[in-house]
Amino acid sequence: MSFTFKQIDHVQLAAPRGSEDEARKFFIDALGFEEVEKPEALKKNGGVWFERGEIQIHIGVEEPFNPARKAHPALEINGLKELMKHLDQQEIDYKQDDKLPGADRIYVADPFGNRIEILEWQ
Image (cartoon, rainbow, N blue to C red; front, side, top):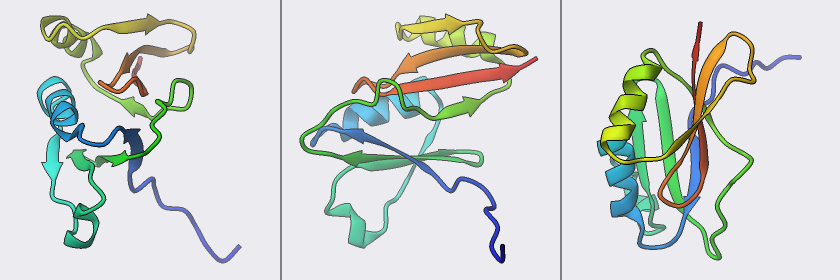
């Protein structure tokens, strides 16, 4: 083949219209992402973009809205136990999972019910 894939540029999750402030509270306050300004031509669509390191997550407005409960991004982390303590302090629920050999991982839902996997390889 004469083409190659380099990396995932971003992951988009859906949210209901008008939920940008809830998204900011979760992705900035709970997960430590920073907001990225959307291009002017896309601002009219609603939603909000975030990044942390090489990871970009775009929250896009979808109507009618249905959360992704099975499909999900998986974010690799260093310091999963510290994140879990932080989520406990923020009163954000998560579910621990031990079914992936060689990894510690949790699942957390964003404020809209979208599933997010966070894992740390041992």
